Each structure stands twice: as C-alpha cells, then as structure tokens.
Length: 254
Image (tube, one colour):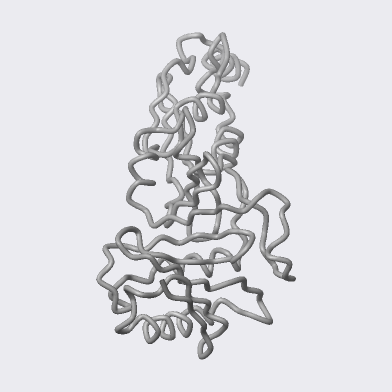
C-alpha cells in the first residue's frame, strides 16, 4: 500500500503529465479571447490527474453564447474542449450593436463589436433583423405597456418583444400582396412596432404596442390580414397605415 500510494503521488506530481496543450472545437460566435480567459491554466501547468474540469465546464457554460461544453483531459497532457453554441434565430439592432438572439430570447453576442468573430458577422448578415430605435428609459408612446429595456449581450429580450418580433419578421411581401423585395421591422418609442418595405414603396404600417393581456401578440396575424386588404389596389398611394386591431385601420395617402 505504501509503495502504491507513493507511485500514485509521483504520477500526480510529475511535470511529465502537465496539461500544456488545449484542443477546442465547436466555436463560431464565441471569441478565442472568451474561451482563453476561462481556460487560463496558469504556470506551471496543472497536472492532468488533478485538474478539476467541472469548474472549467461551468465557466464556459456561463458565457452567453455557449449552451453546453464538454471538458476532458487526455494523456499525456491535452485539455480537450467540445463546445455547443446557442443558435441565433434573429438579429436585434440597437444603436451601434447588432445583437444575436436565440429562440429563448437570450442575447448571445454582438456581431457589430470590434472583437466579433467573422462567423458572427456572417450569421448576423443572414438573419431577419429588428431595428430597435427606442431611447433608453424613454416612455413607450405614453401608453402602459410591458416593453422591456433595450437588450444587451448576456441579457434577455422580453417574452412579448420576442413573440412579436418572430411574428412580424416572418411576414413576407407576398403575404401582403406586395411586390416589394423585402420588409423592415422597427420598434420605437412613438409608434411601437412598424413594418415598411425595404425599398421602392412609400408606406409604413403601424402595428403598435403589445401587452400580455390588453393587446397580445396573437393579434399580429389579424393585423397582417387587414394590412393586405388595405394595400390591395392602393399600395402606391398609401403613406401611413395604423392598424388599431385586426378589423380597424386608418391610413393617409400621398
């Protein structure tokens, strides 16, 4: 027993089994600097037999962009890290930031930041985008709403905003009977949610503000159908369309 114990201690203390290399896979949105900050092993390198990997895994999974991580040590001294990132479903432009948001509303990265990865920028370019023009702390059109603050990396898009954003971003010009090449979705303090053609069409449709009780997000499809009926045969003349609900709307013309 004494001999065995001494041998085990010798292996655990031997510099030959120091963790000197790191093999990381699965990162795209997560920056190398973020991963390196969590995996900083120090000097001298820790021993492969005594390195506590649970803390490293927890540290990685605390990063906004990472859903889960697997951290293992292989002999003689390699730290192998397999990362699964959160998947963004939409982008959220807020000031100078272009935030990537996953299906749960988690803000996982800023694709417009100076240290954003090229993959993050490419992903953002291909995602439907909300143009959030609200002022920080500004009143929401003088109405009582449940609008959450402008999001930031590591934060959360409010559940109502996420629901409305997903519904509005899914509307295509063809759904409205419009020949426009695309639609822009905007959120501001005066009108709430609006959509307008990306180019060549003058109109703006005001969908307004939503709440979980008085004006729920499931009103959006009804408003979209009303918008289609109002645009029919008049799109080129319309400037501003206010969709009070699914059956009542007003508009101004050129």
